[in-house]
Image 1 (cartoon, one colour):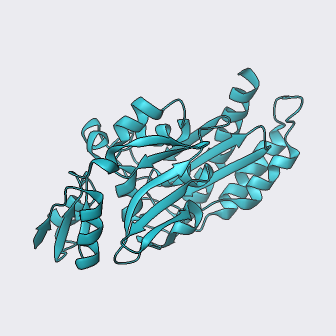
Image 2: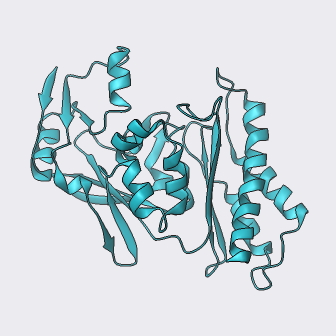
Length: 283
C-alpha cells in the first residue's frame, strides 16, 4: 500500500488525479476501522492531515464555509451557537477521542446512511464543495448521496468542505441507539425551523439506502401558527411524526427492524418539532 502525504491542497488534488484509487484519510475514524478489520485494502492512502486549508472555517457571504478537516470538537466549541443542529449531532459521535479526530468531511466521504452529520446537513440545506484539478463544484446535500456508502464523487475528486447558513431559527437532532455512546444510530432525525421563510427542514438517518428528507412532513409548515406562536396542536405534531416515518425506507438488520425504525422516527419527528417550536415561542 502506498502512502501519499501532500502538504498543500494543490498537491492533494494532483495526487488524487494521479492516483484515483487512493483513499483519503484525515481523522481516520472510519477508514482505520475498515483497514483494521481487513474490509478494505486500497492501493494507496492519501493523508490530508498536513493540508492546512482543510482545517479552516470562514464566513462566506451570508453563509459559513467549513473545511472538510474541521473536527467535530471544533464544530461543537467554535460553531455550536451558529450551527446548533450540527453541533447536537457532533456531540453524539463516538467518544471524546473520536470527536477530537473525526470530521464531517470524513463522514461525507464514507457516505454511510447512518452518518450522524448527514441529517443536520440535509435539514439545513447545506451544499457540499467538491474539487479536482478540473475545477470546483457545489452539490446540495440532498443530491450528494447515491446509495449505501456511495456518493457523486468522481474518482479524481476530493471533498473540500461544506457550506450552510447560520441557523435562522431553532434546530434539533435526535437519534436512537442500542446504548448512549459509541454506537451507530438505529435511526436519527434532524429538524430546522426558519421563521422568516416559514419553512421546516428535515433529515432522516439510518433508515434508508441514503440519508433522506421528508418533503411531505416539511409541507406541514404551512399549517403552523407562525404569527401567533401558539402551542402546536397535538394533531399537527402527531401528523408530522407520521409523515416523517412514511418518508423513511428502512430495512431489518442486526440493529433494529424496519417497523421499529418507522415507529422510532415518528416519535423523534414529533418530539423534535415540539422542542423546536417551544424554543421558538420562548425565545
